[in-house]
Amino acid sequence: MRDLWLRVGLGLLAVAAAVVGAWALAAPRSFYDDFPGGGRSWVTAVGPYNEHLIRDVGGLNLALALLLVAAAVLLERRLVIVALAAYLVNAVPHFAFHVTHMDELSTGDQVGQTVSLALAVLLPLALLPLAARARA
Image 1: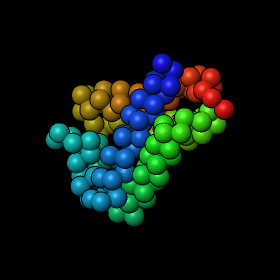
Image 2: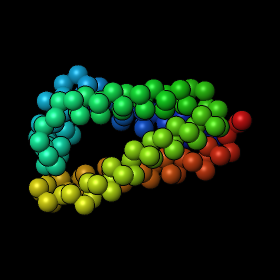
Image 3: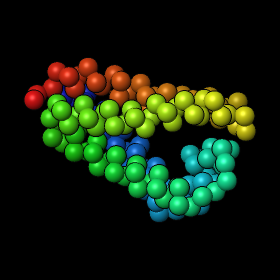
Image 4: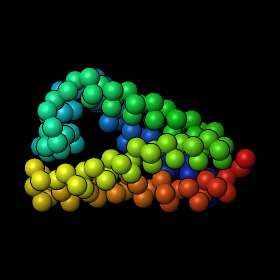
């Protein structure tokens, strides 16, 4: 059962990173103007458009997605722990930045962004104890 939870959790993190990565890399202007979708625009609220920066975000998220997929497939303890730690190295400062830079967002967007970014920190934190008990 532990393996299933690890695979599902790693898979969810990988899908999230892959969606962000593919969108930012393939259509950086659309990512800047339209993320997270549904008529919302969270990226435009924090600074001017920079294609290079957004493409870098896309490539790095796709690299992270690849690491998470490898961890989910192989389910080797050290790889899973490194993948989750790598995800947290991105997710924690990302969360910290956005919760202190919300002035341009509506209340609904502030809530949505905060909840989604908090989940991006809480899920890998919840998976780490399971990973510590995975096979070597």
